[in-house]
Length: 614
Ligand code: ATP
Image (cartoon, rainbow, N blue to C red; front, side):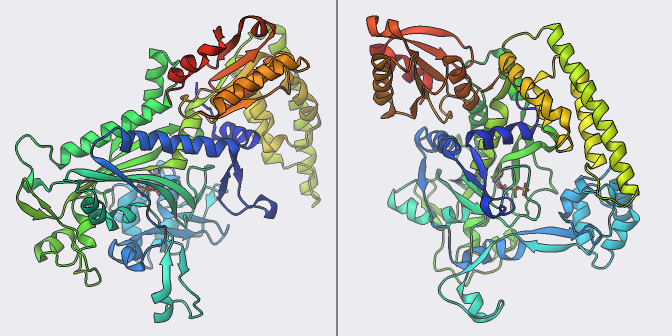
């Protein structure tokens, strides 16, 4: 079973140094995250696995690293300055701000049905369109349909929805002019909201410098920035993130010869290649057939409906992952057939019929025409493009959720389960008393010691977990971490022995693909007060650290050291013992199966390398 909630993954990330909140000493900035020692290794490995598949494994791909800041004209002609907007709406009562489509998606079926009826639309996309298209009417329509604020479950007092541009602005050089003046506009730059435009800008450079023939593609990994209205769900939606994008340039349909792939076939090929990549790295080599099928059931390809498509896209297939908890299915990559829109948008001298077809204005700023002479077709054309666009940081979250496992390593006895039940009953009794006291305090106008709603929410969660024991054993600690459980005395008392019991019965293991694992190998001495054993263990570590991330640890007993490495996904641990000194062999222990094998130190390299799939 993968993670049951994003909380589990988030707790592990903070506890073990994968991801930390940014600027924490100053209370943090909304939705900016720092990648810690293990997070940066994992992120680098995700990017490496992508680059390997997108660039090295193919004959028709090259890499690129374009600047983050580009001419403002790029974003004017790409359409971002005018249309890279999200619709935003505020609740005047709670002062909460929502992306209109997200707010509508969070409503009950009945509320949405009322809005569909009132506006004549059939889905959320149409609804957003209708509400934005009737200035003045939207607040009343949202009111009549009784649109709820998800923050408090009560009907909101909604403002007129308005468009909000998602690009962060900055300026090149010292500018003191006010926003919107010619001087300000001339110096304005945007932090790129996608890496793709850097690739389009370099299409001709790459094609000419490497004498590439269409079809060929360019891959790029880099930071992107979006001033998201409602970031959240841990690192799922952030304002600074990393993308892994490909622009694959192909012949326009009219030049495709017999036996060559057309745009639809190239699109399908990329959807398949990218989907296989996600599955490959979501599945550890130890997985059997049943587990592979289960993993696959959490990934899907979803073709966007006609009204979801950007106007220039002929087709887009999203690859989605079933994230745990309320988040559910979420896009992890979009593979779009963008036709000749982008290269035409940045080109001068585009024929009028093409501008009309693509709904583009004449580009008077560009001094390039991004066309290509095709020696086979003996024709000059602006290539079409297939764009697989994935989030690197979102990929990291996906792989963590899928790899996260809490396993039973020792069957708990009936008495132990009964003990948890009776402790939970004691907590309940105490908490119910506290709820009553708090309610009385509130009535009397006094500051309550506990928040009754939160305590009740905690009790509901605890009851649900206890009712499902022993299957829900891995959720007991999570329930005790509930914000409603804070400052409840029996919870404080109950937690340490439960933690100890959980450590004996269960283990947390990140079943990451070895190529993604932040640390590949950990070496332990059986006895840290035996210098010969320590020396040998350290020499093995030194031998391998040149090739991949290897650590040495002697800070606890072997059992505990194994657990610590399991929790961060280290695929192999080596223990050096007395026998090692005599016969030159060590114990190699595999993370998922916990199987142990004696391997000669001289054979370790050949043993580990293929298993790590580097
Ligand atoms: P959404 O509709 O959810 O805002 P999008 O369709 O605009 O997303 P794309 O522009 O297609 O997203 O971006 C390509 C990929 O970049 C996404 O599949 C996702 O993996 C990643 N991505 C986009 N926005 C964010 C973000 N704010 N935080 C993290 N990753 C993101």
